[in-house]
Each structure stands twice: as C-alpha cells, then as structure tokens.
Length: 247
Length: 247
Image (cartoon, rainbow over all chains, first blue to last red; front, side, top):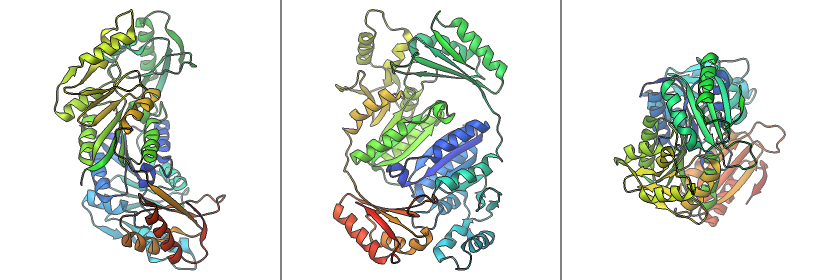
C-alpha cells in the first residue's frame, strides 16, 4: 500500500460507539475534505483506549501523510489521545510551555486547576498552530493533528488544518438510470477498465418513490475527462434507461 | 489486546469517504447495538480497495469475535468485499450453489446476467443465514457478516445478525452540570479509579443556550451499580453544580 498524500481520520470516543452522542465530527470532516478537494482515505471510530488509538494511528500513518484525530484531549481520565499519539510516534509526553501560558491567560484571575494543565501536554517536539479563528491553537506532531471532540471546537480547528493541506477540487457528474445494477455492470466495468484514472461509482436504490433505480457517479479533477466518460457511458448503456444527468 | 465478545464494523465505500452519500449504515448499526446491548468496539470506514478491506478485516478480527461489513457486495467492478474477506480469512472465493438458485428465482422468467451471478460468490465454507424478513439471506464466514450497503437491505439484514449476537442491555444515568470540565476532573478520575467496572463519560458543551456546561454519563449492566456511582459523584462534586439527572 502506498502512502496517500491525503488524510486518514480517527474519531476517538466511547460516547460515539455507545450512541450516547451522534457522530457529527466524522461527517463534517468528510464534507469539508470533499469541498476542499482533500483526499480522505479512511475514517476510524475507536474507543478511548490507549491500545486502540495507538494501533489506529500506526495504521493511519501507513496509509496517509496526514492524520486528523477528534477527541480525547480534555482534562479527564478518559482523555488519552496525547499519550497514545506520543506512543505511536515513539516520543515522550511533555508539557508545552506555550500552551501553559495560553491556558493561564484563558483562566484569567483564578489559576487553572492541575487537571486543566493536562491540556498543555503534547508529544515532544509538537507544534502549536495558531489561528485568528480559534481560541486555542491546533496541536500537531509529525503531521498528526490532534483536535478536540467538542463539535464547535473541532469545526473551527479543522478549518485551520484543511487550509494547510494539499487539495484539488474534483468534478462530478451523476447519471440517474432506470435499470437493474446488474444490467449496467458490463458497460460500467468496461468503461472503468478503459479509463482507469476516472472514478466511477454505482449506487442502487430500492425506494419506489424515486424516479430512478441506479445512480452512477463519474469523478475526475479534469472536467473534460468527466464529460468524456459520461459520453461513453451514455453511448454504451442500453437505450432509453437514462432518466437525467446532473452536471 | 484481548478479543472482545462484541462487534467490529467495517463500512466499505468510496461514496461515503467522498461525501456523495451521507453515511447512514454506521450510525444505524451503532444505535441498534446500543439498543440490543451488543458491545461495539470500532467502526472503520474504508475505500472500495482490496488492500484496505483485507487490512481492516484482519484488524477487526483481532479486536472482536464478530465482524459486520457494509457494502461492496453488488455486481459491479467496485464490489470487492467478498474477495477481500476471503483473502483475509485465507479461503478461496467460490460460487455458492444455494445463492445461485435464490438469484435465479428472484429474476424469474428472464435468466440473470452473468454479472448478477457475481452476487452468488462467497468465501469457501460460507453460510447463508435465511430470515423471513429479508429476500436474500445473510452471507457469513467465520463470524464475518457481509451485508449489502444499500440502506434498506443493510437494515433488514442487520436485524437477522443482531438477533444472533450475545447482548446485555446497559443501564445509563446522565448528570447535567454547571461547571468547567476541569473542575470535575479530580472527582471523576477518583470515582472511575474506585469503580473500574463502571463506565464514566464526560462531555463538555460550549452552547450557551443550554442549561448545563458538562454532561457526565454513568453506565453498567447492573442498575444498582449505576445508582451507587451516581450517589458517590453527587456527594463528592462541588456543591450546587448539578442541574438535573436523567435516570
């Protein structure tokens, strides 16, 4: 497996896996990566357990240059992300003096309790990426960005991260068809084989209230390539099955 | 890492990672596992690529006794789940005669095209689990359940699967608090250390329209244990911070 110049995401939280909160950060990250043309190679939801997170980080780093984690960076006993990421990177956990200053400023007159200062910990050599849009900087070490799980904070820090990542928006066309998926498979497979640089998707629905039975998507960075693939499919598909096309 | 008697889920689909469809099957699976008291150890969203799926299946099987996959079992070029699961299990892909019969029956008068018969493939030794609620049986090999990604089909087959899994519904209490999370951390950590069998969660919000700032959850199979943990927290937390409790 080659390392993608994209992102592998890790959502950390028992609260997600036990349905105590609806998973929102993964869905938001998927949408923002799409909008920015950043390739997302996987999303892995794991519990607040060091072993699971270490394993997920090691796997993510074999797959993608950039890793974004969500959750487990607060002050309580279940916040083990910094420790796990440090283990995965083979670095000790240290207190980041700059972050101590930021936390003291945020607390104002009353000094922050010892537990709050846990939030100043990071893997040795970590960077703090400041942004005018977020109160706290983004914590990053070796291209692993450790974001808070609280949705408001996750979203604002994510903007700081995606602005730094390489991206190229993708062109998309969608064909809506009245046919069984298996009746399209031969043409779709032949076209995919002939145009390996283009990404094709085929999504059947069994919802009888819709005016189509299969949706076929065509994607490429180059709009002309998407148009050529669409033309080829429209030529080779059985006659009369195309309901409409979204460009 | 010990193998959990629960489930590790794998959601297969470029369409999810590229935000062409909203991920619904993972969220539904999380909710149903919760309702049935089935422990869910991870949810892994990966692309339609054999290498990714093989790796995800191997990892899932190290974590959990049961694996549920969603997607990649249709008739088109991007449907590679059966091949990948077979590779991960070290078994050849074979055509399952019983499934061929089922597909021929489903097609009726006109014989199904060769592409449709791809849906009759499975890892050697696979079982087909019939249910009165689903048109097609559930495909399973070595406790890896391969479900279709189309949401209607996924949901109906999932019911057949969860009915077979060991589960114990969990009791939950939720405390809503007016305090900073870091002001609770000491008490919460001490309680979690004293009652290691009880699962505690702590979830801050920054939404000023809400009447609380942190939500603390307490979970255990035994309702009395949950009540004891709640009592201990209410005794040890700073006075006057509890807004309400959901039992």
